[in-house]
Length: 245
Ligand SMILES: Cc1cc2nc3c(=O)[nH]c(=O)nc-3n(C[C@H](O)[C@H](O)[C@H](O)COP(=O)(O)O)c2cc1C
Ligand code: SF4
Ligand code: SF4
Image (cartoon, rainbow, N blue to C red; front, side, top):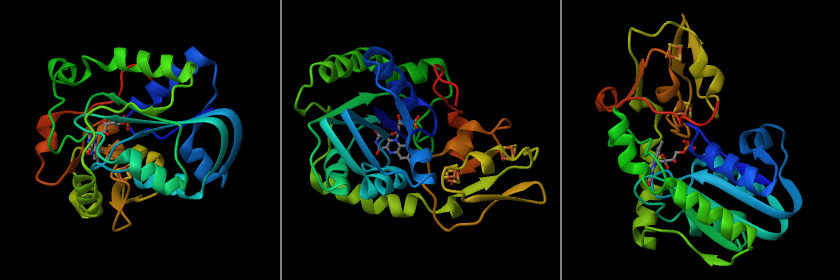
C-alpha cells in the first residue's frame, strides 16, 4: 500500500503512478487520520508527502508520529520544487524507525509566495525531470532497493532552521481573502485541518496555525485567497494536471 498526503495533487500523482505500476493500493493519509487508522501490515508500505520548509507538513508528521507500519519493505518519497531538505531524517524521527529507502521527485513548487507558476513555461522549469524520476522510484521500489536516493537534500543545520521557519510560515494571519470571493465554501470544506469556517459567506481562519498547504489558495475558483504581501496573485494558481482532487 501507498499512503499519501497531497494538497495540490503532485503527491497524489506520484502515488497514482507507483500504484499503477506495482498494483499497490493508494490510501489517503487524511482519511487515516480522520478515521484514527494508524496501524498497517503489508509486504510493502510507501509514504508519499510534499516538503514544507525543508521539513514535513504537520499532517504527515502527525500521521507518522502515531503510525505503526509493519512491512518487509518500507519506503519514503518526498516531492519538492527546490530541495526536499531534511524530510528523510524528520520522517525517520517521527516514525521512530528507519525506512528501507528514501526517494525524492522534483515537481512544480507550490510555494507561490516565492515561486512563479503563472505560465506553462514557468511550471515546465520545475518539471523537466519529474517523469524520469518517477520511473526511477518505480523501478527501485519494484526491486526493493535499499538506501538514500534523494537529490538536493539540505544539511541537517538548514533542515532544522526550516523546521523553525515553518512555525511562522503556517500562521493563518498570513492568509487573506479578496472581494472576488463568491462564498462557495470549497476552501472550508477541503481544508485538511479544519482551519477555515464560513461566516457571512466569507472564509474566516479560526485557528492561529494551519498546515499551510496552500490548497485553499490554489483551488479557489475565483483565486480569491492570497498569502502575505500578495505576490501570490502574480505567481498564479497550480494544481497537478493529471489528477482529480
Ligand atoms: C508551505 C509550503 C512550503 C514548501 N516548502 C518547500 C521546501 O522547503 N522545499 C521544496 O522544494 N518545496 C517546497 N514546497 C513545495 C512542495 O513541496 C511541492 O510543490 C509539492 O510537490 C506539493 O505537493 P502536493 O501538490 O502533493 O501538495 C512547499 C510548499 C508549501 C505549500
Ligand atoms: S473557495 Fe474561494 S470563492 Fe469559494 S468561499 Fe473560498 S475564497 Fe470564496
Ligand atoms: S487554511 Fe488553507 S493553507 Fe491552511 S491548511 Fe487549510 S487549506 Fe491549507
